[in-house]
Image (cartoon, rainbow, N blue to C red; front, side):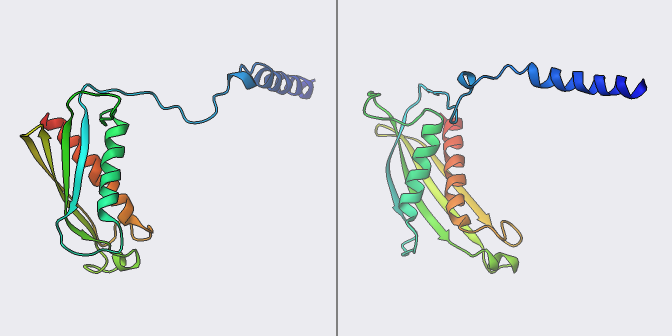
Length: 168
């Protein structure tokens, strides 16, 4: 008798779990949901330059430019022609870049990845702020991460946009 009650209890729990599902194929949302964020502050990246005066085997200008625009777009602050109006302008300068290497970061002072930038935030011809950001990955940090130099441009861009928001 005791085995029959256990069997019925397990069967009832299983039926309750599987039969009471509210999900239907029509209710499922496929793809990532991205809410539209809009900010009254609009910024346009007008120029990025390589002030390190070195030739790198990666496109430091393009990576920083894309990173800044992606960070602004994520916050709804990227100026486009459809928006109109007078945007703030952002001019970026790559001051220092060192690509580094993943195996090199296993040894101290050898495979460091370094990026240092300075950005000028302008309102028309009026200088609003100078934003400086520096990121260094050294011994023991991201030791086995390949192409961490791409990630460092994203991190620096996020930091620049956050600092720009604080200064506005």
